[in-house]
Amino acid sequence: DAGVIQSPRHEVTEMGQEVTLRCKPISGHDYLFWYRQTMMRGLELLIYFNNNVPIDDSGMPEDRFSAKMPNASFSTLKIQPSEPRDSAVYFCASLRGGGTGELFFGEGSRLTVL
Amino acid sequence: AQSVTQLGSHVSVSEGALVLLRCNYSSSVPPYLFWYVQYPNQGLQLLLKYTTGATLVKGINGFEAEFKKSETSFHLTKPSAHMSDAAEYFCAVTTYTGRRALTFGSGTRLQVQP
Image 1 (tube, each protein chain N blue to C red):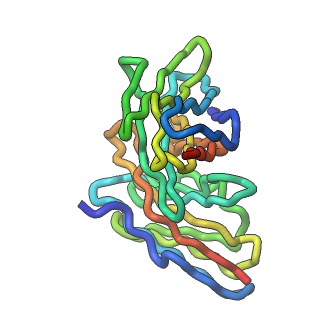
Image 2 (cartoon, chains in turn orange, purple):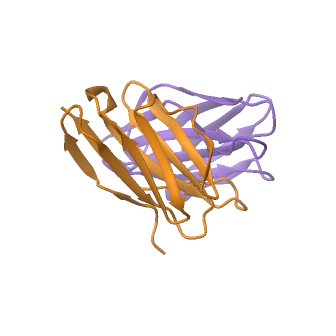
């Protein structure tokens, strides 16, 4: 079975540009999570969905960040406009609600904002 | 609310030596505990987990961890380090009530010297 699939793996953009990160969770998983990893702050939860509905977005840094999950097999994280401090690795993870709480992570999207 | 503290951001051992990575947690309800490993430029991979039952849990690559409720600890050990164990290790906690997202520690980078 395919794992969590994220794209792009690497993105370099200039300040002010819009960035869209994409995630396909594991089929049958009903929870989807977006995390951000930086040297300074470690792994931070940005937002998570259950059955495509956002449950907790308290970790979203500010209004420049938005996330959607239009269906069970696709989610996006959008940053508009991007800033250099948004440079980080963004991870998507999914979980099966009836399981033992284990998150399955994608390979991450490394974002560099110049 | 739950939290995780990992003692030591960097640990260095010799090949063949014991590996001990420390994790203490805080949770107002019974926790589910996890150790993940992250190799460079990769996502997080589950090493092992404690949910209920036996407090000594075995994971992949010869790692094990013991849940000690009285000490609120979940330390990760491996009897004999291998060069391929060099990576970053994250302890994480969640509960089955309320918020389903994992809360991660700040990570411990393990170096293995030849």
